[in-house]
Every structure is written in structure tokens, then in C-alpha cells.
Length: 116
Image 1: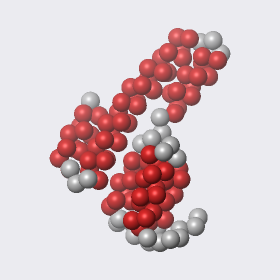
Image 2: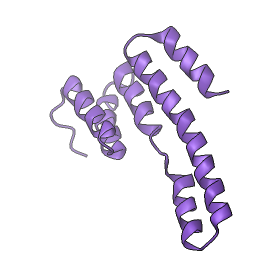
Image 3: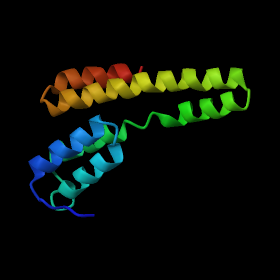
Image 4: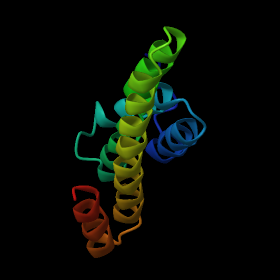
């Protein structure tokens, strides 16, 4: 992995843009370049968590396979499970953004709501 330039602000901004544009793996790689020499970099740690929450695929992928096989009931069930999981993921993403912005009490409220 090429970790140049070594400017952590640049890498955080680039990584966050990659995550937001649908490339979480590439964004997480940028955050790892920051964390390798500085494992305590809070922004890179939070952004890594944000990138990791974007995995919305397993239920939706299985639903598409079941649909292709003609199992409409199974497909519907997986899509519903995926939608519920996505709601929890989005609540966690919102909490991470608030935490990153220094709004810790609001982030805790969002995380508590996501677990209910």
C-alpha cells in the first residue's frame, strides 16, 4: 500500500470522500495509512468505523439470489431483514458523524436508539 503523501488531514479527507462515494474499502485503506504510524488518531479511527458500517450487502445479495431462483417469500424476508439492518447501520453512521463533529451526547443517543 502506498501511503504517500503522509499528510493525515489529506488522507482523512480523501478516505472520507471515498467512503461517501461508495468505495469504503479504498477509504478504509486511506485511514489505515494514518493509523499505521499513529494508532491513536481519533479521526482516522472514527472514519474507519464509519467505513466499516457501510456493509449493507449480505441480506440484499441473498434476496436477489432467492428472487432469481423463484423463492419470492424467502426473497421478501431477506429484503425486509436487510432494510431493518440498514436502519441500524444508518443510525450508527449518524452517531459516528456526530461523534466526529464533537457532539458526543447526541452520538450516544443515536447509538442507544440503534440498539433498540
